[in-house]
Length: 274
Image 1 (spheres, rainbow, N blue to C red):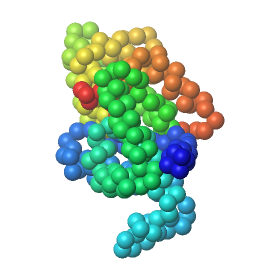
Image 2: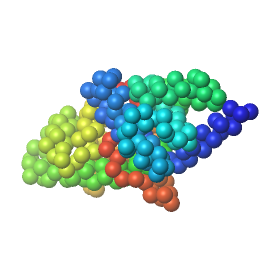
Image 3: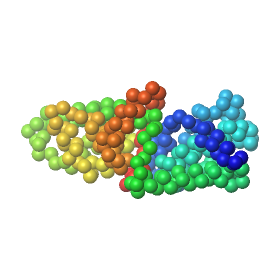
């Protein structure tokens, strides 16, 4: 029972929602080594935020063999972060040297078997999400802010496109869906500094609109533009789930007592085409 009680304490090491690392790392042009380094860096940031002041001072001092001076409680927090992040990162998380280090410790730790079981259950759940057999978790506290900021950016880009269509109204309705998508993507590239969320997710928008180009035309020609609906459609496509479920889930995140953290740089997807 000793191992069981320790594992239960691990489950309580981090109880509040935490940002998903997959939302913080680039999804294009990453080698295995670079991706592993990015994951380690994000694990480090999450861990540092949840440490005691004493452990934080030890880490920031960067003295030789500093890891041996970290408290067992702080290591339990790191283990919990790794297990929870494995649900969305899946196999990618094992590219991190920190994850390999913790796994090597679990093999001989009294509660290690319980940690290994939980870790592999998380990896299995990630595969189920990838295959569309289970909904992905949408508890990242940054999602609500991410939607709000991205909708503002969509308003800006769609506004520019609508303005251009008014100026060239004689030719506006001759534009094919492919032409509209190309202009949308080009505008994002040109205005990348003012629409950072769209720019970071450019490849995802390109793939989405290659499959659903008509949605952009509807948004442009409707009497009242609905960029929030376009975002919900894109985001639900990214996650492989129902659009209305996504809308309601994000709305609940915004109305929860704990306000979501701002500053999500990009939001990832479990779907293979991303």
